[in-house]
Length: 178
Image (cartoon, rainbow, N blue to C red; front, side, top):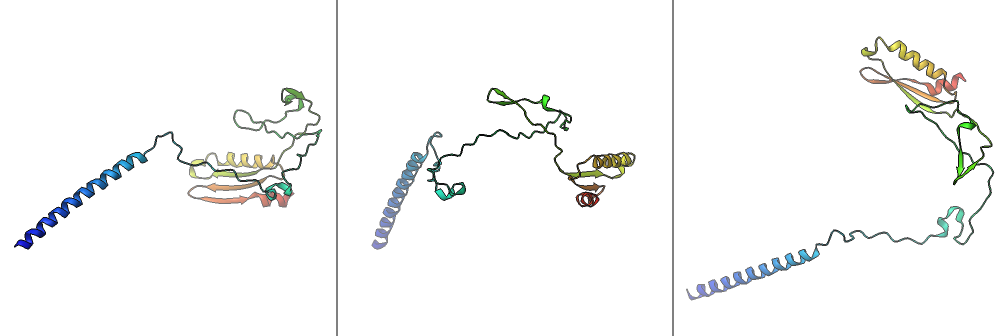
């Protein structure tokens, strides 16, 4: 019985020692965690450092010691598209309807042209039963729109009632007719 008592005391002492060490470890972890918290103003992401520019990366393989190219130009193209408040193209504008400035200095408009640039358009047409009374007017509107188009414009049409279907690829048809 004497041995069992000694073991019980040693085991009890070991458990007490373990409990103290565990408590110290938890306290140390809590203190270090509290110190690891930073203010919201501290930077958490390091900014990238700039890499040196390699001469091979420059356009045309120019070295960084070359001088910039300066050229005097007499003509600058300024393409514009004018839309009204309902997002429709405004036609019929001329040179007198525009002003061009370089800084605060007005510039002469020497050449002016109006061009109809080609576009690609998708037409989606509702052919469901709800359009029964309106379908002929809708088809007429599509035909009129196509007649007024630039010959280089591309079109496709999708009709839908229950499911969408490609009704026509008018890009090919347009090309064949011209």
